[in-house]
Length: 487
Ligand code: ADP
Image 1: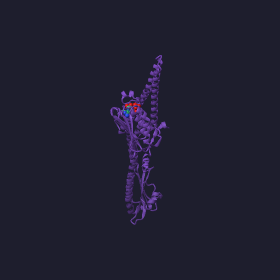
Image 2: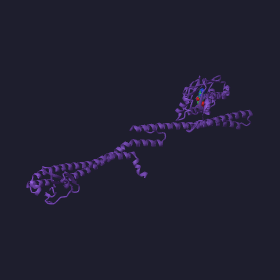
Image 3: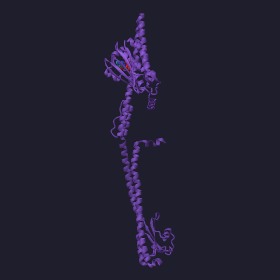
Image 4: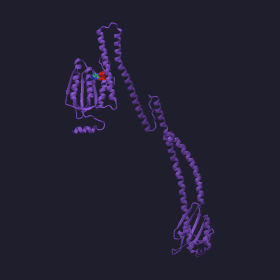
């Protein structure tokens, strides 16, 4: 069944049908309607004319003493016969006993007439009736004397053949005109539907080309504003898809590269141990330690990647609880203290106030750890990393500040990208995967917070983290905040 109506689903077919019907329907309705109205007007005006003739005759009949009694008034009879002929019809006069006293056909004189219209006219009604079969118009008008008594009925019938002939002529002309109009409507509907749908066909062709060659954009269509909007939005979506595809490719290539580097190092170390004949035990130990470090590096990259993948998932969940931020910052700083001491970096903590925040503790610990760790890693001997904790009525603010290497201006916009490492020269000495800040940002975004960075090369870096004090779920965040504020 579906395939039968399939052509009707096309806009082209619909516009064609619409235009065609809009052309022919009014014409097809109006033409017969006009003919019908014309016919009614003619019948109406003829019946008025017959009525007034009958009325005139009624006066003359009443005045003529002999007409009603014997039908014998030569002058009047002559006049009635002339008029009847001019109507191609018949005139009859009946008296009050419904007996025919005059018949222009000379057929029914002396007979009693019991037609319904005549009986009603004898009771005072003026009636007119068109017989569709015989095409005769009939009027029956009472004859009233000077006292107001009904003394007879005048019956006039008129042949309406002439009307039928006129209507037939008009009809044949109209049918011809209809054929011309239909042909015209058909052509115009075809042309218009074609013109109207052409931009859509072009757009569809453009999309087909995009499917064939993914790199294409949909060509700009200068026609309807709506189509221009569709093209614009489709191209914006395509550009976004291209970007996503590009970043996916870059990500895969970065992952492969990052995973390969420790493997290559391990292979070189292992090969030099295997191929070197008698290798001193010290060298064995040193190389095995290096291999261990490379394994640690590989493990860290894999773990970081897993963290990112987990956070990227649409349905990734946070394990929210109310956490004392002062406590967890102190805990992180305590854990990092040995590394800082080794690098001769001083760790400071300034707590402006006690802050309780609804967070996923594990993830935020990782955030603070990454930031402080970076402050230590990208620093000079004798430098410091300072963490400041504060809050306003809505947010917990954590500032991680160092006086280390700083970030080059052109790198600032990229440091949150996966695998991005700012300064390639010192990156070689300082270990890292370039995933730490990407993980940090993902975790903060999951909490609907924000992270900002400002840095001066050679002077230091400041990271500002903002986390909502009350965890914001999608729908009831406002209600949640309000409730807490009230409490
Ligand atoms: P990495 O594993 O390289 O540390 P991150 O994602 O943590 O990866 O950081 C990305 C890059 O941003 C680093 O390689 C570094 O160049 C720069 N960076 C991050 N934190 C700091 C900082 N506190 N000082 C200077 N540079 C930093």
